[in-house]
Length: 139
Image (cartoon, rainbow, N blue to C red; front, side, top):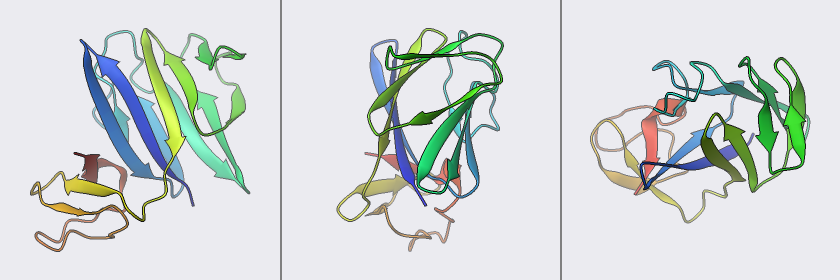
């Protein structure tokens, strides 16, 4: 199972989101996405990450192409394999996707803001599940 770090900038401010990939991760502008990027150039559901064996792949869910690290132009509905450090061009936003080792990483629970080890499954303070996408943010 991959744990992924997504990093992007909007209006000069860097955003980071860490998500454990269990089945899939959806990136988009829509509030129900696992990684929400609030930029009007990003589609409601722009891309989906899935794991097949040891490979991580991205599928383009939008109606426009996704550029991957300047080397792959991914057409709508198509998939490609990602490697750690790849940059996805989603609309006008560059999103760096990195594989994360959780051993020394600390995060904040989005529910109660407590600092905890990133490899925790639940927040010891409020009990929120950290396995699902929307619960961890780096600090």
